[in-house]
Length: 64
Image (tube, rainbow, N blue to C red; front, top):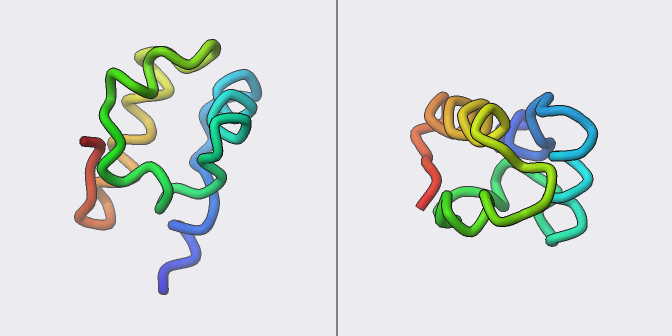
């Protein structure tokens, strides 16, 4: 198990809150989730999505 997958990357408070409120509390939770679905969340913008995608790619994972 990789501890980095157990937390969200540093994406800013609004995006972190939005993901947490939507039930995504770890990076692992975001693997395979459609990018468009996350983009609909208030506070989650292109920058946050890019950071999340990069973090996932470091573990051989990706957004859906």
